[in-house]
Image 1 (tube, rainbow, N blue to C red):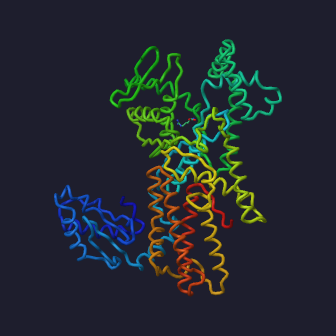
Image 2 (spheres, helix red, strand yellow):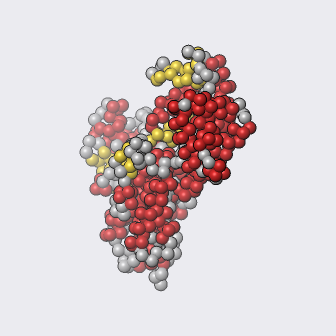
Image 3 (cartoon, protein in one colour):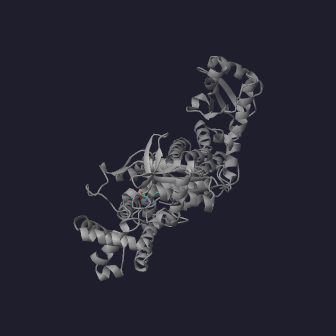
Length: 576
Ligand code: ARG
């Protein structure tokens, strides 16, 4: 928790608190003493609960501990602490001075990272996300990995990490035998000449259906696969073409969503490394033969076995992911590798993480599992007939947003651009505002609501601040926004100031927890607080000095909101 306040120099609040604990109870470890933001402003600005936490170790009632610490703290109270109170079972409530807070705001405003501590400096992280299977169109089920993965990618970049965003395409396996056969026999010459992912998907479905009822067809698919695996020129060329077309199509989607990958190393990339991985697994006795296959047991961990080489000699998903970790460590030496996939793959990740650890691989491996997404209350499945293509979902988002834009501004000159920014923002935020681990239901009305916890609500809040700043700048006696001071003249201003100072710590917490929702929650709360400040405190109509300081607070809010939304991958138009 210490990083929570470093930017605000609560390091000083904390060092004062720590010193108080140490003076009252010498010889004990109080390194975990912290000041948390108060849950209710009537208790002050910060609260320290460590008297309660220390009761067991010190074998004293928490209140008695707090009393003794309180006595020491009062003796050494720094100037910027305006009030210290002892409350309830042993809480220490702290109020800071307005001047100190104003000074912290100026620092935040000047800081090039807006208070985000660069804890990732000179560290690398690989983030494996989106990772769709080639030769299939992306559908609504792919949105979560792409959107959550990209937000984690941006979060890590924002805290200073060198991020390698890797799209681990499903570009190898039995489906390619079926595809090659289908390509040759189920498509017209014209379709083959103008190959699209939609056609690839179509010929796959046809060919797979035939393979089910026709033994000869099935064998022929298998032969094509064997030829491909043996490096047959024609089949390899086809496979390459399929992958290229798929990537092109995926990139079209990524471009719209503002998602960029550094590498597209799919499963096939690790193909040549798998035999040696398995050899080493056998050598180190991690893998053992079983009914012609090679398996790894997880008796200690209480997990089912994983097959690392099938009885036909083929390798599988586990083997490929172990080879992949080894290769990433060799190429990048990352501190961490983060995987974003749906939660049905949890066992797979647990298993290969254990194998990697037992093989002595050093990187920290993290799986960020997300829950399923349903659509309008229904599971997304072919049977429900709502296996919506991602393309169509995005189109629908744009269509609906354009209506909203035109309703408000019928002659809006850049309605199309705005519709994309708002529509995609809505789709992304609808996902990111939930803890990734939970299942979510996508609902257009909620996603596009202008009131309430939605992307468009936050985008509007930003656009309103921009328009306020513009009005201010047209005043004859307007000052440049970087000049002057922050003066916090009311309680709600002070609340907003305290909240803005929590931006960096919230970004850090979101990154450390792999939960963009922590940042989304923070931004929504901040926007609400801003709106109650704005309702209660006139800005442009206030007397000049108050006005100049309030507009700076508004501008700082705008900066925090816009930076925060960008970290979530959401655009912030200045005018809506
Ligand atoms: N292609 C897989 C899927 O569609 C996801 C791959 C995730 N990454 C990994 N290294 N296993 O489910």
